[in-house]
Length: 171
Image (cartoon, rainbow, N blue to C red; front, side):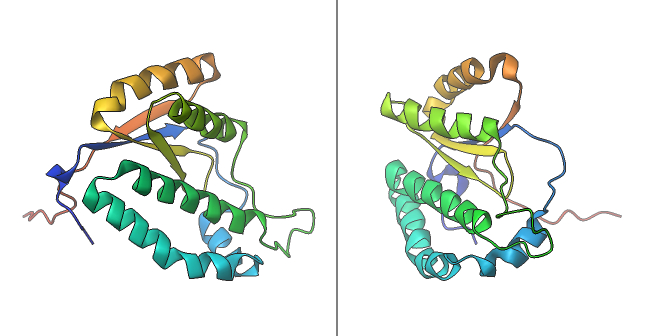
């Protein structure tokens, strides 16, 4: 559901692709395991407040409110995975999707914010990081990412608000 039109706010999402290999435990399986985490119920209880903070921040163009809520939600999702019980793989203490590159980007994001570049991260069920910033800060973010990734590798995809999906009639 769209809550604001694309022209409401000039935001960017820079996806930092760090790992393209298949995950040992896929997202669907990870979701099925979520209820085994001792923190699952707390996360579920917090979701309405998180969604409201994101919605409020988006509508008010309050980047800090929206960004911090999204960032904390991403961490919450991964805490559930890391504390899930994988009963058919006794050698696993949980589901860990983050890799060393993931942590480098997370820590860099927080350092950039400390130093004045307002950027926030989110992470789906994988190692890749999605960085949120306002359009005016995109060139500065790309410079910072270039220095961070350098020879370590990784590629980026930049997205901006758009009209969304629509049906195209074909013959």
